[in-house]
Image (cartoon, rainbow, N blue to C red):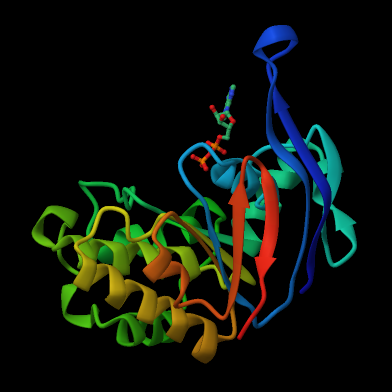
Length: 224
Ligand code: ADP
């Protein structure tokens, strides 16, 4: 799987209210990549994430997955594409409070009418250290554990890439570091590409490739 963003632009509003949220961003993401995108509030991080993951369409430019321009897919095809090939992790976890950890993790499969694979669920729960917590409700779990459940949910449909939007933003620094370590393990042991959006330079530094975004302009930080 190769993701190629070419000259992505996004503008909001018009006339005096026109905002250029993203200005000709180009980026290639390969199968084993682990990258962070860092920038201050309002710099265009969420906009870029939404375009890369097909949650929104660019004003100009394209996003290609293995050469297929997802921005040109009809809505229904794009939703199915996202369900099967992209995993999402959010700052606020977004677990359903009345469902157990196990039920939350399996939800994307149910929505896609797929049978759960118990062996893979066990592997994920083992990797993420939540095997003993699968029968618990979210409110019975710590923030770090809830985020681990959310990571398992993002991976259950075996997507090729996982986008994490400020995944440590709601956690103390220790739990945040642990979540980044787990994302590193997901990248290394499961071979998934991982893209982490953050405004925290310590979190950003844990990724293999680092990009920054300032006023909608994306650039890659040269590796030492
Ligand atoms: P970040 O995620 O880095 O905080 P965003 O991508 O959310 O930044 O926003 C980038 C810029 O685009 C900001 O100036 C923001 O106010 C503007 N923006 C984002 N979404 C909208 C929208 N729906 N309508 C108008 N302006 C928007």
